Length: 297
View 1 (cartoon, rainbow, N blue to C red):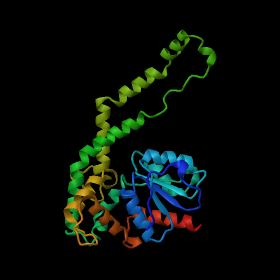
View 2 (tube, rainbow, N blue to C red):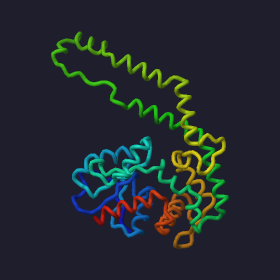
View 3 (cartoon, rainbow, N blue to C red):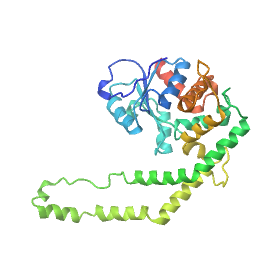
View 4 (cartoon, helix red, strand yellow):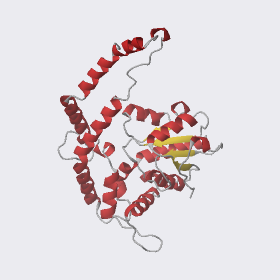
């Protein structure tokens, strides 16, 4: 299997014509790199998979490299990105003008392993598909309020990142301390922004944001159902995968020892990635086809 490298820096990546997919993760054992390495290697795509740190780091490296390395591709979690941004990344990928950046449609890679129809394909599962469905629903139901609340925080934080005031440019207007203080204290942007912040942090506005997000996740259902709402796509799946795998799956290593914890989860998901391509989640199949088409072109 192709080795996965960690700690990759833009200036240290050698010039070559090889195809490389950079993903989130701090080292070679991060789930994204392990899973995708297994998936793409098993499907005979000649591409290396390398972890490159958190999403914001990948953005920075993509910005630095896309003009010079058209065979480097970058894949990140959904995070705060809009549906429009995400769909554009898929419809145009790989597109150097878009930094060869691709964004998962689901919140985290773990969410793709929480479809019962896919997860039950593992021969290491000890319960039925129907039981698996109930367990997955139960765990998402437990998390829906905290996930909705955290999404409110993420949205508000992103709103406040906008470039809401421009720096001064006219040197002739700044001949003294008094000039500078006057320009700063009379700038209309400050009271306007203060009003905007006050409005966004109003209790009624926060409550409305929460209700809108909750409705989006739940599909207006008190009890979550498969196919209703976007809870499977947008809620956090990391802890749920860990819980499901630890509770209802069993796998042994080459020496016959029962695996536990991170090693267990990694091997279960790697095993699922070895299934035929037509059984993989839709986004995995699409990723495979996009990369294959690009590499063969």
